[in-house]
Image (tube, helix red, strand yellow):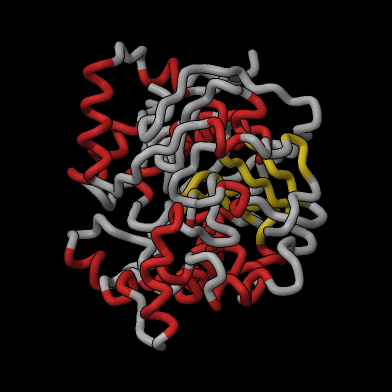
Length: 347
């Protein structure tokens, strides 16, 4: 694992040993735990708890800011919908925010499920915001558009390239910013490196991205025997080649990371939690090189308990995203700490 060379909030080497591990719950199944947690906890109003503190000059919010529960419900009821403030194709960038923001979900997830908080927050701050469901395969059709980001990663990068051009043509902008969760934070690096995307992207912000793959806490060792025999991995056979491609040490990741992590000319920010149970070890999310900033949430807020599933709804992570997109330094930056839980993030 290459060191995080340009870090403002360096990862704690003691983090994984002293913080409990948590179960991985995909997609709709996470809704069951989320509903149970809601019964046990008195939830404050969604918009008040999730929205980072805004400057005094910030206008009154126009869009309702949702929680992870809103995301899970949207995934069940209307998976192809856009969160409030997202995909307004009449939006035109301002001099303050000249780069439109494209939001990218992670493996098995979609825009509606992932970005019910960040989408409205960015729109309220004056950004033009768009979301891309990518990586469709037969699982996407089988589930009625509820499972995305499962197709081969190079094909997904081509879909991103086409979408970036569509956004640039619609908005008149010269570049975009990308914000992605999990695979959505790693896949754009293929686009930057191999599809000419670096000239069109100003900044890439990754929330718990799978930049150097994952061991899934050792579970991927179960498929090594198949790969040693030259057989397709079970996840590939199950309709998720992107899952196998995100295994630590996969041929795709070796090709992606050969010769260094950073892409010249693109600012890259990685925001990660020590309690990541999907990207393991959590430090495999971090990048090395010029123009890279790596942030560990527990270095900012030691009691932050968000995990991989909850980080798109974590109030601290959302403040970090706003900071990153504004171009601000993280050297002396301290976000406002607040309650954040596994799976749910902020309530």
